[in-house]
Structures are given as structure tokens and as C-alpha cells.
Amino acid sequence: MLDPTVETTEDILLWKSNQLEMLLEVGNTLALTHDMTELFQKIVDGAAQLMNRGSAAIYLLNHEGLLNLEATFPSLPDDFPEAMKRALVTKHPHIYRVLSTMKESVLPDTRVAHLTEEELLVTVSRDLRSLFYIPLCNQGRAIGVLIVGSVERVHEFTQDEIDIFHALANMAALEIERTRLSHERQAYIDEIEEHIQQQERIKKSLSESEQRYRHLAENALDIIYRIKVASAPKRHQLEYISPSVQNITGYTQEDFEDRPDLVRDIIHPVDYANLKKLSEEIHGTEPLTTLVKSKQGKLVWLEHRITPQYDQDGLLAALEGIARDITERKQAEEELCRVYDELNHAYEETIESLAKGLELRDYETEGHSRRVVELTLQLARELGVPEDELVTIQRGALLHDIGKIGIADAILLKPGPLTEDEWEIMRRHPKLAYDMLYTIEYLRPSLEIPLYHHEKFDGSGYPFGKKGEEIPLAARMFSVVDVYDALTSDRPYRKAWTKADALKYIEEQSGRHFDPRIVDAFLTMEKNTCDPDDPT
Image (tube, rainbow, N blue to C red; front, side, top):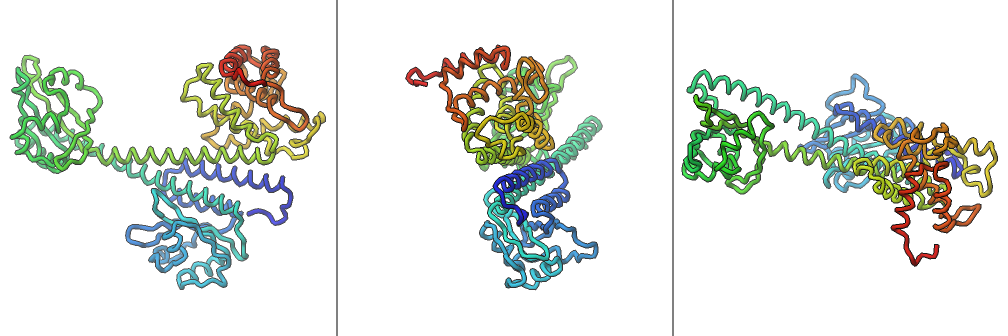
């Protein structure tokens, strides 16, 4: 991966930046993939790309203890035996060790390692030398292994490479689980739609023959019931409930005949005395979803579709309902939300790593990103920005100077004033940030701050010379915070200003560098949070 000729700190940091950018691109590609076979191939393609066109493979462990070879890079030849794509996990002890311990493992040189016949067949046929095994884990268990390796030559894996592949493996495991749940959810939705169509056919049959109605209802998977509505609430009567109620709730048809309260508590858990009002509310609306407890104490989610039936005088005579057990669907939805949350957390950690990588390069700005993020979010709330827009502002503020990765140390870390030529190079960093991050789809809404935070309200800024409200609000807010934090922080060429002097400067630049409305809000916010005992 890392070129052995790389020697300078700048080159190493640039390499790390490229690897992180490449990792983000791979993660974004995986997130947009919905086909499982395609997902496996993109995982190994991404791993090989990070390995500088090395070799990669992904194995998953099924419930029978068999390893399934899901994808490789380079691709397997067309005549590769199907039987070799399946193997007992005990035949691959190096993979077995990783699955058992859920810890990565390095095989330095396959030519001197003790290998089983199956392992030897794979390494020799692919001319593999050094191998790195990374577990794919989900919910505390290993579901498979990602293997990356060098071809024809021995390769020593560095800690940076190990960290990169570990991050890729985490992304891959989350995306595999997300895709699996998505497929299961779609299959369940398809099944529901099929059930709905089936129930529509049942409903049509009911009008043709009472006998046919009974036959279909008795064999339906869902609970079918009919409640006769009387003039007095206590005289409402459960006329019919299908046998499937026992499979779903544990209660028999006889239980419902003996205990009228079960209709209210299990089948129709609403105010049983107000069925007439209920029929008016539910007619033509979305299905009613309820959570009930079965006879065995298990919580069951039911989805009701209820149709009011009226007599010849237009009065409510009965309620006919179909209740479907959607417990598995609910659980799948909750699990899918959890996986999305974990994936989003992984993306946020990657963004923070990019920002920290830049601060490590420019130690004089250490802590700058964290401070400006907190202050920008505080200012956004002061200006009434909706909470659901704050995450976009947070990401943009965190990555505002990421374009400086492309600026040479000689300019970025120069202790004295920059020449005009050097300033021309420095002014490129907003566009560099935009070009670097635009390919990552979920970061595009956050690019306003990195691209425009050096524009000025009077049009004298860069890189485009935008002015006034041509500059996005997020960038106008951030420019105030960025300048304030820079002035109140030590720099190689000057000491930090006092907060009072910095606020005075911000006020003086109202209408020139900064939006007056934002300046007013910022000054008010700072005055309200000012510590009277702080001498600065």
C-alpha cells in the first residue's frame, strides 16, 4: 500500500489522507448497493484497491458451520469448481481461529507457514504470499472473514494498514447486515401485499356465499372477526372469530365465547363502549396498529383493517375486521434502524478522523475544529436554525479546512507572512475541499461551509467573490466563528487577542467581512455567556 520510497512526513500524511478518502468512497459505494452479490464483490474490490491491487476474498459462515466463498479479487476463473467454494470451517484453521476469537490475524509468508491441504490449494493457485484476516462481526458474533493479501511478494502490514482494513471490515459487516435486513423486509412486504390481495379475494368471496366465507375464514392465516353492534354497549356481541386467533394469541375460540373482555383486551383494545364513534374514525383511514399480550405473556403486534357494516337504515350494524400478526416486521424495522444508526456513527467517526488528521499536521490549530463546531452550533440555535439541519452544519464546520491537506507544509506551516504567490496557493483550499468531498454523496449537503467560509459579506472574499445573501447562511455564520476563534488563539506569528478585542473587531467588520444580522446575534450570544471573572 504505502510506497517504500515515501519518506517525508508530508507524503505520509498525504498517503493517509488518500487512504481515508478512498475508504470513504468505498463506504459510500457500499451504502448505495442493494444487491447482496454485488455488495460482496464491491467489498473485495474496495479491499484490493486499498491494498494497491492486491488480492482479496470474503467468506461467510452459515448456520451449518460451512464457509461460503462469496467473492474474490481478482475474480475466480469460469472453470473454478463449485465444490471448492464450500468448505468445513475446520479445514481452514486460520479462518477458524479468527472466527473463534473475533480478532484479526496476519500470516506473514504462506511459503513457510503450516497450511492444510485446502489452504495450500488456495494460496498456490492464487500465488498468495502475505495474508491479513479480519473478522466481520455483528452483534457480538463473527459472521465471516475478510482476507486481503499480497501477490508474488511478501508484504509487511503496517499499523495504519491494519486500522484501515479494520474500518473497512466494520463498514462491510454493517452493510451486509443492512442489506440482509432490507431483503428480509422487502420479502415480508411482498408477503404482506400478497396477503392483502388474498384478503381482497376473500372479501369478494364473502359476498357470494356464506359457506365459502366460512371455508376461507377458517383457513386464513390472519385473524378474521365480526362484532355485532347493539343499541347498548354491553350487548355488543362477538359473532365470529377465526381459528387462527389461537396460533397468534394463544386464546381459543371457546375462550372468547366464555370471556367477552378478551375482545376488548386482545382483538380490539379500545374503548369497547364507543364502537360507533370508532367506526367513524377508522373508516377509510390507515390500518390500526395495537400491541397486545398473548395468553403465554408474549407481546404481539397486530395490524387491523376494519370495515363498518351498516343496516338498511344507515345505522352501524357490525364491524368486520382482519388482524395480522406484524411482530416480526416490527422487530425487523427496529433492527434496521439500529443498523442504520451504527452505520451513521461509523461515518461520523470517519469524518472526525479526517479533521483530527489535519490538526495533527498543523499542531498550532489543535482543538480549533472542536471549538468552532460547538460555537457554530450554538450560534445556529441562537439564529433559530431547525434542529434537523444542525447535523449538516456540524459536518461542514468539522471539515471546513480539510482542503488544506492539499497545501504544502512550507506554506501551511510558514511562521511568517505569506507571499502573494503563496496566498494564491492557499486560497485554493476551499475548492480542494469541495473537489475532495463532492463524490461522497451524504457529505454534499455539508459542503457550503468548506467551499464558502472565506467569502466576505461585501464581496471581497474568495474563492468566488460572492457577497451578501449569495453566500449560504451556514457559511456566513461559520465565518464569524472561525475568525473569532482564530483571533483568540495563539499563532506562530502572534499571540492570542483578548476576547474583548476580538469581539470589537467582529463588530467593526459588520457589513464588510460579516453579515450584520449574524454579528448582532453572535455578540448577544457571547455577552450572555461571558464569565464576569474572566480577565480576558
